[in-house]
Image 1 (cartoon, rainbow, N blue to C red):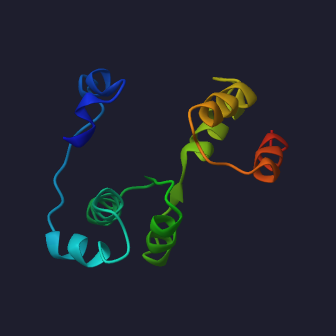
Image 2 (image 1 turned 90 degrees about the vertical axis):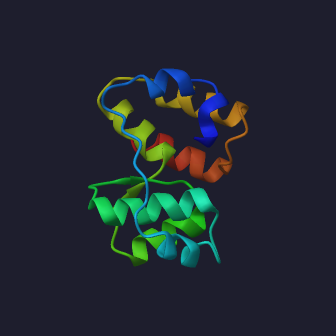
Length: 117
């Protein structure tokens, strides 16, 4: 697993409700890799194979492909927004932290998101 050395990866690997699955249709993954990175391609194909309810994906091109396959999607900001609506976190602080870590979000979009609460 490529993310094994990232911050929090060990903790995530030890969670009971997180399962690592292999994509069955490698040909479909390779087909999507003409326009997407392998990670996005695998996530989309795995979501389609698993008939998942929601795909978490931030990559703009990946989102377009997933939507064209009728997959329901959200991104990091969507997850934060849901958590903020449930009063589980402070959306502004969370967005500010993401931006400080290099997450890309325009000022206009930032302001629009904050107004959603």
